[in-house]
Length: 345
Image (cartoon, rainbow, N blue to C red):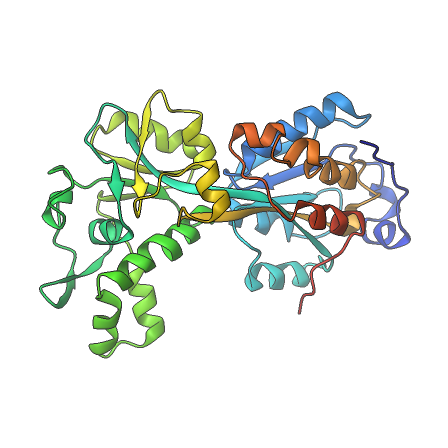
């Protein structure tokens, strides 16, 4: 691979200012805990193989990373935000408010969200979205009525599940994983159980019904995890009956302590995510502040290295760690080379 060092553009110099152009010589990245291990692998390899310092990679969650990204332009702000969800209009509005007007979106591949528990714990081996909704939803359908969730054990609503107390450790609201968990598990479960239609029939607006569908119980039955997956793993280790929500790659690197459940009869693995058969998967991204390209050394070069075939392709080290390679990786490579920015309003 050949990566050319770029000279600073007039726009970037103006944005960051001449006094700060040389104030920082390493790329700074923050955001998604799901993307964190991939970004860390790439950052270490980048530092080892190129004439740039090793980038600094921090976690904190997708929303937190994008918030930092949108704080402004300059060497005192991060260059790249990792995210396990697409950028939202609210993120873009904050960026525009603070002068971050040119954003490059980079899709690095795909990941699955899995439900895992202690390897020697209860037999949580097969779930449907309806099971997760009936266990964790704040409001569910019981005997044709929409009621506050009365279930205390998994077997209360599905005799095929263990007669064990319901305890689930789920991603906190600042994590991109939470949005996928809500949309592809809770919302689907709400619809398939008939709870959504019953909410509409009771007089709820569609928006209110959707909000009710993704509201979780709390009270120790669901526990938001604001840290990364290592915190979720620690909670599972301390709670034999608990289940946790993880990224596929994290689970695959902890198969000695965790068992994973199927979802809708499909085992989460690279092949089923790549084919789209596994229902709870999502694309992973990072976002580049274009104004920092050519000003903060190595920003574009790092991005190009990250998505090179040898790194993010199906035979690269990221795939070995669990990333599902993007079949449209070549288009992403071309977009980064051309510094194509999002069309934002």
